[in-house]
Image (cartoon, rainbow, N blue to C red; front, top):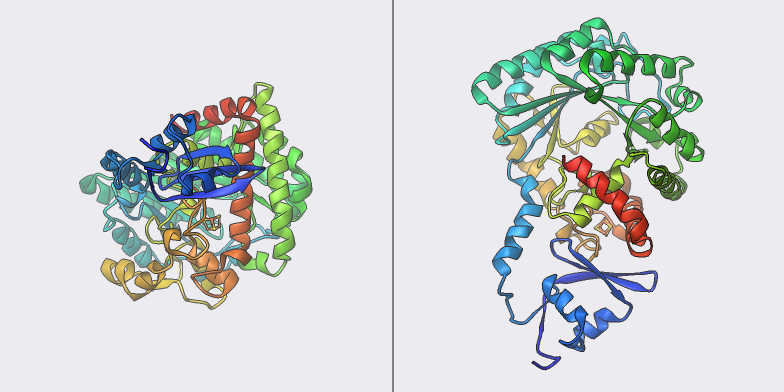
Length: 473
Ligand code: SF4
């Protein structure tokens, strides 16, 4: 056949370090010399070239207007989007806004420990559990949040007990997660966790000085570590995980933060940026913070790679999620990197105030008297909440395949849409990619991961594969 007789299939490309990354619609990629896209478009790729066959195999070109294996390609796309099959799987229950810490970056507008009027009403809690079971998802995760939910152990017990009771007939795969600062892990709380097999998700910001400064308390680190150890002893090592939040102070301590995780027997860390909600929004120059966070992320990832090269298995969870999207055909179930977005499709929030919100960030906006993402009352019907006017409006902007900037971005299948973040930072749900700090952060991090894969494949790929395989197991 002549070199001109092939057809183009939809693909995206990005120039990086004098190379071109070509990505097809399901996220498979090829790295090719600069100028390759132009040669493809002008039908200059010849059949005798290896590249020709790589492009064919990766659905970037086709010998026929519709590729012979289009059905296989369709199955692969369906697999990538299979997180949509079950609809909402993560159900967040904000049991109270009360808290016993005073975090500098608090995103939840937490209240004093004795502000009991900020607790969820038992009737609302029971109705929320009933709403959750209206979701068609076979997997249901109930996540208890606050404030600090351990200040309301009776609500944790009621929720777990009622859900377990309903599940005797519903027979879903039910998982409970308690998001706690671990400062108040009393025997009563841990006994409830043991009884209902509740996992603990805590937050550890690094070494004692940094952690205490972030919490606004002198003894927080000591208490958190004691709480983690107590929970591990009673529930098991694998029942406790931790997250960190990168405060402005933390930006200078990448090594110390990773070391503190290793010292405390964690095998992974999730390097998480501050979110522009709650207290954090007043305390931060976001543009400056975003740039510094991107540098911090890269430095920390480099340090983690060094540690792995010395034979210590230690995962950076965000990179691992992106790598799963780049290197495997499977969806990852991480709500921030989804299109259609995680809001409503994968996560929903039942709030202490008796209302249902589209996401965790949505209820944080409500604390600032912005009720844009309030979907309805907990007492409303499932249909009105999940398929009502508000949900339909949000759905118009929740697919990055349809958003200017994202729709032709080479990282579209690795990234996600976030109408709530667009709204809170840019004033509308649609957003504007060239000035979006979230877009800049994702693009920079994915660029960096690609640069590692392109320039240092032999060194990093075995480490990355070990992370992905471990997570798959
Ligand atoms: S948010 Fe940015 S990086 Fe993500 S798909 Fe859209 S344009 Fe690409």
